[in-house]
Image 1 (tube, one colour):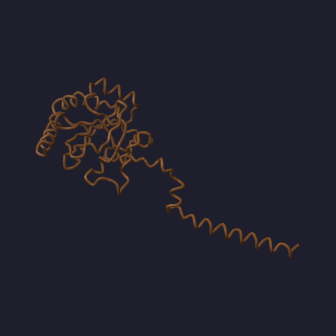
Image 2 (image 1 turned 120 degrees about the vertical axis):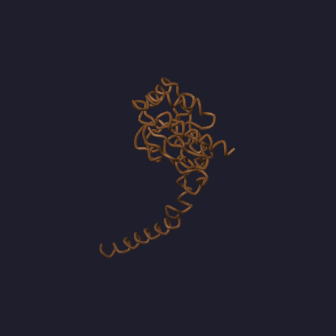
Image 3 (image 1 turned 120 degrees about the horizontal axis):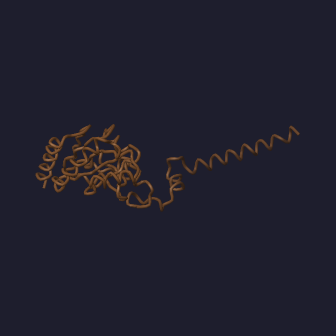
Length: 214
C-alpha cells in the first residue's frame, strides 16, 4: 500500500499545479477579464439611467461623482443628486454658475416653523434673481410635504436629505442653516437662524452677483 500511494499523491499535486496556472491566466480582481465577468454590459448606463437605483440615495457624491469624471467647474458641495419632496429629483450641479441659497430645515423644528413665512416672503422678492432650494432632513416624505404645504413653500424646490450625508457635505450639523452660493461657485455657510433683514442683505448681494454675470 505505501508503494501505491506515491503515484496518487504525485498525480494530485500535478492537478493542483495545473489549476493554479489556469486561475492565474484569468487575471486578478483588477484585471479586465475579471471586470467583464462581474459587470454585465447592460449595467453600464451611467447617471442618465432612471432605473439605476442609486440616483436618489441622498449622497453628496451622487451618481456622477466618480472622481476623474467630475466637472471641475462644479463645486464639490454641489456634486449631488437626490429626491425632492414632490417626488421628483434634483441635481446640485444645476446650481453651478447661479446665485442660490439653500435653506436647511426640519419639519418638527420650531425655529424653522417661525422662519418659514420669512423664507416665503424672501423667495417672492428675490426668486427671479436667486434660486431657492430647501433641504429638509429628519422627516418622512409625508411629513416634509405637509410642512411645505402648511407654510406655502411650494414655490421652490425642496431636496430631501434622507440619510444626513447632504447636510454633512455642507458642514451643517443642525437646522436651521443657510448655504449661499455665488455664480463663481463660492459657498458660504450660515449656521443658525437669520433675521429677515440680514437674509435680505445676503440675497441682495447674490442678486447683484447674478446680474453682473449676465
